[in-house]
Structures are given as C-alpha cells and as structure tokens.
Image (cartoon, rainbow, N blue to C red; front, side, top):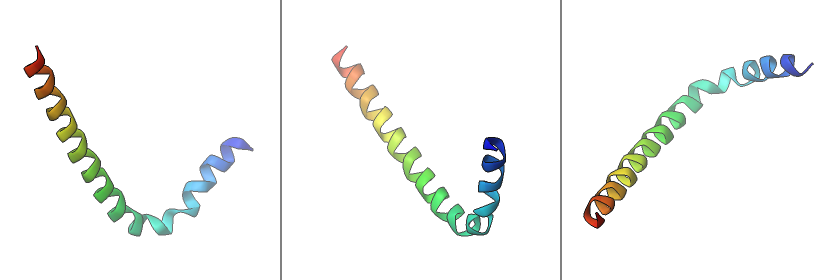
Length: 50
C-alpha cells in the first residue's frame, strides 16, 4: 500500500501544478541567485585569506 500512496499523491496535486509551477520557478530562481552570491562571496573571502 505504500507504493500506491506515492503514486496517488502526485495525481491529487496535478491541478495545482499550473499555479505551483510559477512559485516553483520563482523560488528556484531565488535559490540559484542566493547560491551563486553565497558561493562567490565565500570564494572571494577564501581567496583573500589565502
């Protein structure tokens, strides 16, 4: 019964994917931007320290 639950749950949220895709893309964009900024900042601090 566990695998059937994992298969049924995505189908239940399918109608909301159209609305969630916009939020998902925006959150993904913000996450990537923050990740790049943090990596660049950390790399600059590490390069300056060495």
